[in-house]
Image (cartoon, rainbow, N blue to C red):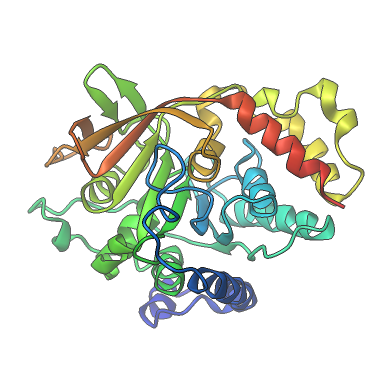
Length: 341
């Protein structure tokens, strides 16, 4: 498959044309809603402690569909007063290396959600791109881009939906490669996007862009933290409490309920696997309960295995979420799920 030939034209791969068309239809609807608003300093101020809230269109960027509830939260919140879901971009990782399995899982989720009455859900698209290589100069502009389908989707959706006071959120649960790739293709994308990532850890000096997810593409981490408004969510909760075995009897009798019940035994016990914290931090203002302003280190060493460190900076361009309310998340999950058909 000639990814380069397709990507150079800025078009999706032929096999995903239908998915892209449906995604653009959702984007058009979201744009119509967004453009009906007027700018008002009080009305448009974010409702939580972060620079985005449930009114910002959201693009989910993740790899596997079976280890956490990231996709489920995205589709449920989109139908219960949370962020409009503008796109679902699916990639790979060391843990989830099979793109067909990954995108197939998200397509199955979306199909089940639609069959259960949820609306305005885009078709997931596959994106293939290797980790970006840091150039010998250490200069971001000298980086060779992947020209991935995910990068072009981010650029296109942000141009259609991003407003100066309401940027598009890219909520990630894996590598930041496609976002950095989008910047390499169009640096103005950083003006229209806020990145919210389940990634890294809290340190005594601020934050680290390491495990989880920050070790997947350190140079992409550096590009994103240096060039975008970046929110790192390094606060997790026990995701096994979202759908414990003793509550499976409460799951609705519909396609989405069947999907959730079948997936429940496979949810990872490791709390940092709960990638949905990025979706929740962006779309549920009560979820993030503590955050710091930070700024990324100005350089990254050759051969780095993690992204840059994040240090305290008053009014810095980055945020680090250090605590969260898992109970608020779980309550919202069930409230939205009970309203499915």
